[in-house]
Length: 400
Image 1: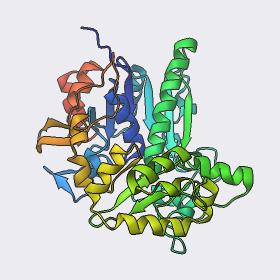
Image 2: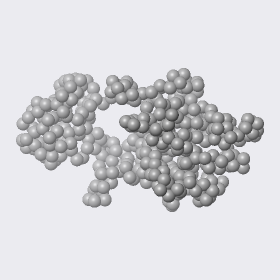
Image 3: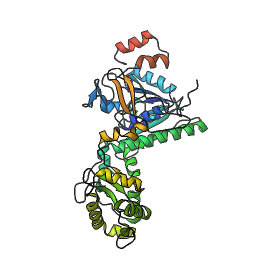
Image 4: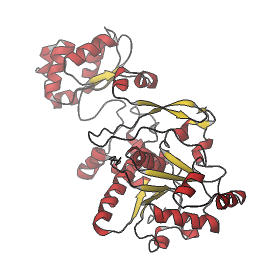
């Protein structure tokens, strides 16, 4: 039966570790690509040791970014391992790596060194600052890039220290850009027959996601300021306390402001009368308006206001805990939690792919692999190696 998934038939040699690269290849695996994850034969991906928390001896960090992959424990720094690397590269469409500059070139495995031997290969190189940057030799991690890109400068409460986003948001955005770039290169190769190198920097991606905030500075010279949970371009837009739990309201235009005043606050005069009847008036009187709304919302519990917000057609929602969100009825309705068998965990629960295709559905999730779980299968099925050769490589410590 023909596999109709979006990336069916694409094979990826994944040398990446930690988060940005593994998230990229996991997204590709969800769409049907075959992922051969190359790991250090003894220690594996760095995140295998990043525990607690853990389940069945496997770190939650590793589990979060490595479903649907085949793990091969391979020391490609040895001559024998290097030849296996090339043999696999010849059979793959895409290579993803995120080593520091020099790691691949010292072993003649960087793109310039291998592009003639593997002209078909799409080589995605993810690094902190990019291979051509004056900072190319430096390591870089998500919170550092949040700081250097200016992203932290406008995060947090006014007058307080800048705050990093607690999620690895730059790694996550970079993984999305990487997946997008690889698929673009796949389409290009369909026309040209040749692969190419993708030089992707976390720093560049961090600047790119400044979006309208960055545009405000470039166009008007305006440095963004800290606003806590509010938004500079509209009011009310932020978190509000109720008599029980907090809610978030986003009233972004005049129509929504009218609905909010009429259907939620039940104060229709606010929708048209000065000073709150216009967007500029609301922004110029932000503190007074927020205080007025806060006083009203504190009089009733969260669920009361959520009902009025939903029925009134106003954008808003509960400020949930992670547990509340992952167990919410809409989470279940969208199938966003999946379960798959795992060799040591048993039933492993994971957050599902958010992609929904009408004709080419994503793959049924397979639990992240144990270190070297698929070494024998990949060497046998992809490279046609025999049992004796595989055994010799294992005895020599080249594979696991």
